[in-house]
Amino acid sequence: MPHNAKEGMLYGLIICTITVIIMSTVNIGLEFGKLDTEVFLIILKSFPIILIIAMLLEVLVIGRIAEKLVHTFSDDTDGFNAKILFTIFFTVIGMSLIMTVIGGMLGKGISLDSFGSLSHWPRNFSIALFCELLIAQPPARFVMKKLHLRQEDKLDYDFD
Image (cartoon, rainbow, N blue to C red; front, side):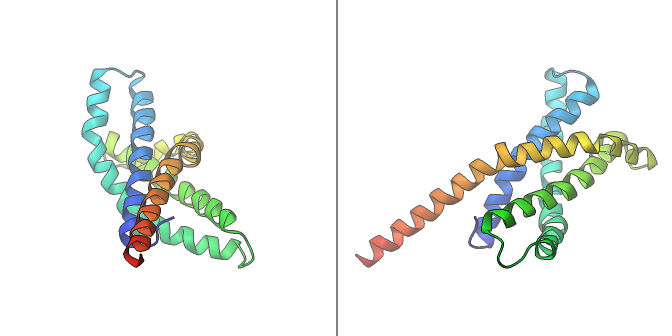
């Protein structure tokens, strides 16, 4: 896990990048009913704005709410892994809900029709939770572990 803000940004960027790629591909592909060159170009064009929105939303809103919910629903005696799972669960609930609406707004324009995309939320939540737990988190944790091992090696070398 990240030890400071810089590592937190790297960790978040890895997770958001993987999740945005997967969720954009699924949602835009389902909206068009196909995955061809045209759809991949749309995904590629929308990727930067969706990534920026997701990063800002996670850091400024959802991440903070998730932390508060973890403190509400867990005790100090709960293990590290339990708190991580709670954090992932609450973050995915919030991000999938809001990003479903934002995706509708990006695809259909800002109107009440955008909220019709909420009918896709259960699907998006399921895919996002699966993605987070099994696809996005492992490489992000791997990078953090390698980064921390490298930092420890530097410290060991400095004291020898």
